[in-house]
Image (cartoon, rainbow, N blue to C red; front, top):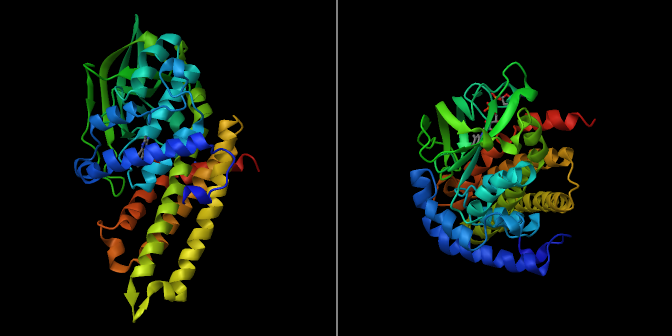
Amino acid sequence: MDMKTRVNGWESPDHELYRTTVRRFIEAEFVPHREKWIEQGYCDKSAWLKAGEVGLLCPDIPAEWGGGGCDFGFDAIVYEELMRAGITSFGSGIQSIVAHYLVVYGTEAQKQKYLPAMARGEIITSIAMTEPGTGSDLQAVKTRAVRDGDHYVVNGSKTFITNGYNADLIVLVCKTNPAERAKGISLLCVETRDLEGFRRGKPLKKIGQKGQDTCELFFTDCRIPVQNLLGGQEGQGFFQLMNQLGRERLIIAISAVASMEACVAATTDYIKQREAFGRKLVDFQTAKFTVVECKTETRIARVYVDKCIEQLIAGELSNEDASMAKYWCTEKAFDIAHRCLQLHGGYGYIMDYPIAHYFADARVGMIYGGSNEIMKELISRSL
Ligand SMILES: Cc1cc2nc3c(=O)[nH]c(=O)nc-3n(C[C@H](O)[C@H](O)[C@H](O)COP(=O)(O)OP(=O)(O)OC[C@H]3O[C@@H](n4cnc5c(N)ncnc54)[C@H](O)[C@@H]3O)c2cc1C
């Protein structure tokens, strides 16, 4: 949606200026590399350094730890602009989530060590929860961390890890007490450089978001210093994760709405220029009504998500709303991409057309960040 048609309570002139900078940067530095990143299955590390230079990373982390010292609205703008440009290869959402784990739970030493380098793009991060044997049932993770003197010895494997191929720092979900479920989980900050026993697979081949690196990770007797335990206390991991998931879910919803907006814009242009039976497609009622319906639903989603952004900035976003926004917007994003693709006819199936990417990229929104069935399970607790 054009920024001028937006009515919300969180966007100030400073946000607008930042949006312009981000938009120009993405057009100049990311869009020319999009095909290459899709081809190789990950985005270049140099892109992270450039993004760090212009303040795209960690804009809402306090300045004392190297961040931009701004509010979440600035972070939201980055996800909107990435999606607007069709860039799903750059995993800055995960970087932001990890940064917030560190801000909220990290020891002073952990904050100083990691956050400024993350904001500069020198450290790329992942969150490794999912394992080959368990995803939705997070409390059943098997990756084990056993205390041995001033180290933990880590064994296990993870899969589907975003930024896994590039990651320098992994927030690893592991069991420090396997006799417990939630209470047995701890988060370890695993530094991957020169880590003995650590191995990553090649980026997994996906049906969409092909340039986003998504990897398997393997840990065999990896020795992690005890001071890398997030927050310094065992058994807190599950609660730390749960308290931050609202933010992750809203980030997914923000990207979903931006994807809907991009689909509507691309399809509006397309039906105005494509002809059939001697008329423009826009002159067929079915075509224009489809776009009108998609546009209306997109506007509704936008208003809801803007409200959620406002609430997150105010520290008032409920888990219920975060889950509702994630569930509903990701379903709508896929549905709208599907309807808009149909209006492109055969061209909609060809990857040279942005709509094909939006369609394929949207599918995973219903799966990751907690599947939409899990979202409904969470929302049902408030009935
Ligand atoms: C591209 C991509 C990127 C990802 N990035 C990350 C990442 O960075 N870090 C990370 O840790 N993980 C990541 N994931 C993993 C993702 O979060 C999981 O795939 C997701 O949580 C589902 O887990 P699962 O695949 O094991 O499915 P399962 O848990 O096996 O679920 C299979 C099906 O059963 C349903 N189901 C399961 N339990 C219930 C229930 N109680 N009630 C109703 N239905 C249920 C699910 O909704 C799903 O439809 C990523 C996945 C993908 C595809």
